[in-house]
Amino acid sequence: MPYFLDGNNLVGAARGTARPSEDDRAALAREICDRLRRTRASAVLFFDGPSPGGASSLGTLAIRYSGAEPADDRILAEIGRARSAREIVVVTADRGLARRAKEAGARALAPDEFWRSFGAAAAAPAAKDAPVNAADVAEWLRYFGDEKDRG
Image (cartoon, rainbow, N blue to C red; front, side):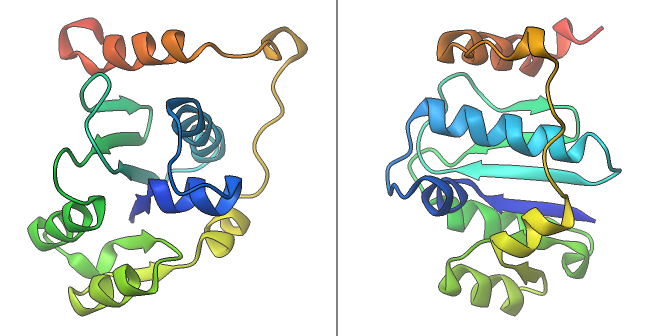
């Protein structure tokens, strides 16, 4: 069952900001990857705006940027293209998006329920506790987003 995650909404709820920075987005992606790594679940994380480096994937997490259109519209378009919309779970605190996702045949889940479903993030070893540079994350996303680099 794929999860479609309303990225800006999740960052906004966690960090109390309507305009997340690339650092905020990268932190959210890392958190979700850590939690998904222990499961068989897959997710697509949608962010508003242009991509800093193209669409990318981190394990079972795909990251998409909406470009000029709202991420909500991209989420709904993906639901419309799905073979079975009822298997998709849209994670958002946006009541309007949740309602529209349900009307399109998907299910909706509040962020707190999503976080509880996947438990706490795995603790990182001490050697990895150093701060992550946003430029390094962007480069990593570009590298692993390129099919030829995934040998």
